[in-house]
Length: 325
Image (tube, rainbow, N blue to C red; front, side, top):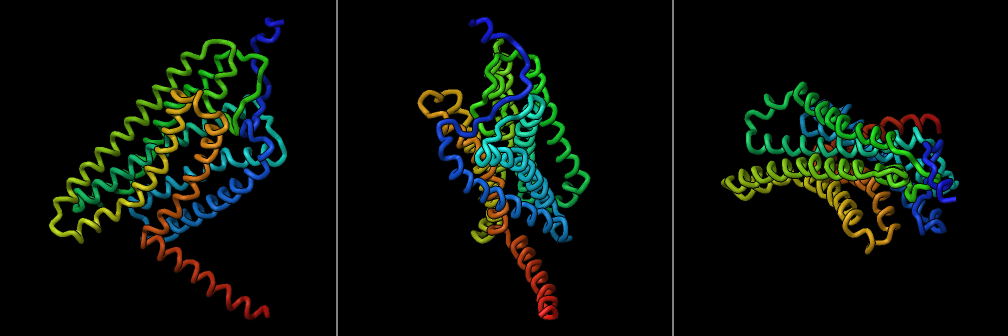
């Protein structure tokens, strides 16, 4: 009987269970997730439309921000709709191919966002430490190349994960205790050794993302050194205010990711599984929801542009409403 239960095969479908242990609360959990997803969609679409439409925002910082906005839209849309289908309708079936596609997209977008944050840190470094060459160094062609490099790097380091999953033989158990497909969640269903998957996942996390964090830290170390050399306190405050939004997004991006990564591998027995899964679910919707708010509140130019757009829209609609009445 044991031989039958462990017969190796490639399943046609997997079953995502949502948040294990909290199934009876799925309907209530779905309400904040649905609200956050709608806010994330609206906020990022408004921010992206504002940057694309307003010519004065076609500057390096805002062009990198638009790339981050696209990544946030893709990350939340790749995961949250299926998550809500599980919470609302208990539709957890996902085909093997669709699951692998979701694995690739989730990790690919995460790695691309990390690369974009490095580019934004470099942008702030040039703006503060070498302002006279800011426009000449970060031309539109250079920005496109940097963004393309982030995408290509992410593609090259994440694609092997898909092939590592394809090479595995899977057991009859096809239940994934998660709300979406991710690399190790799928690999743990295999009957064969997943040592290569574990090592590669750790290598990508520690080297790729670790290098990104080091580069960001170096950039801000140089920025702080330049800021403290400014003659007046007002100039120092103005210089640091331009970095405030980016620093908030960095903390929002890396802190939950590394908390989940470290506790999953070194504190897995002390922290309940549903806490891990809930944190992973929040990670794909909370940063995309808050990033537009952070930049909208802290950046005066974006805030004024959005307000003027809505004022113009209201003035356009008001005469139409008056004629209709």
